[in-house]
Length: 461
Ligand code: PLP
Image (cartoon, rainbow, N blue to C red):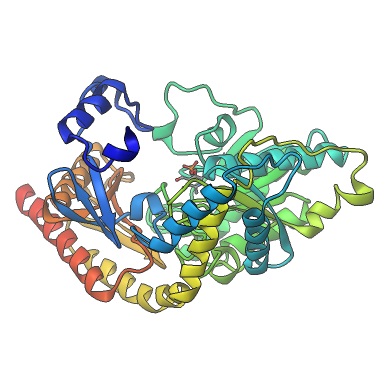
């Protein structure tokens, strides 16, 4: 029985079961049936994870950008257990529950502008998918059935549903899948590091904005429903657009009645020192913000979107035109997930984690930029508690080479040996630790990363 033996499983048997029966969300098919190099994690506490070999590692990527308050939180575990026993489920179709109602109130209170209504889903992909489906609903109700095109960016990532995968412009996610690309249009990634040689950042910004504006014109503003964008492209390699980018794009959206959907699945819930980054860090109040991950610090799955009252008002009340909004998630506002989120938000508030991030992030960023001075590192960038170093072995290459990627993987491997998990994304090593991280722990993390980069550098001599 799981309840009796869950903590005493035989590791070898578990690894064998995984190889035989488990499909991962990033499976190299030629290696199906082998470990694919994946470690088995057995327990975790704070920012540390233990693997099945008894090794303790700093969790550099914070799971997958999600373990805001850290592992092993008793209050979150208690909230989950208490809610599971109180009432583990209610149908959101014909009833409401306490945690979802209270969580919607809390999120509406700290969301920017008039973003005041929340729809809950089960994770980030379903949050973005639901926001996009809302755009379709909205324009149908408004009698504009053609206004459905979605403009998004190369290297953006928005999820793995049929529609969100189509809107994700990362080449690596695309081969061998059929994508719902009919109404999806890509513009350039705001990749300042890889901008055309010799072009100033200001000129690059103008180019990006002009590209968006031209795309709207080409498609026809009457056909464009949404601009979908992460405030900073996370999985695309911590790409922080030039200052003013968001505001200028938003102005164009406003001019053409295009919904601006800010995908804050990564940046939400404290990653940049604020509940949401759109307004406080990037100076915009979008129409819709999507969230997931940090809302529960990864303890249980939850996602959703928060939407502006002004937008909602156009298709509700006397403007509803007899419409019925159906986006029928069995688990929308799941009481256990929402209870976990409330406990998580309480911890972020009680521990002052937003202020902590604002205080410690400059140090974190300063330290990561020092790594940028190493010969192997072409660029070191980030904001808040998210950063990356990009390995560049050929300074003349316009794009990351296969060898750069191989080298980054080697850095990751040495980090692991040294006690640090680093998320490999192409030629980049990415860090987004739990928000509770201390200065000393940042030092530990940077020392291991530096040592691993230097080791690879020495090997390449
Ligand atoms: N949006 C962004 C910006 C993401 O980074 C991710 C996942 O990493 C998603 C959406 C999809 O979230 P999920 O994996 O919870 O479905």
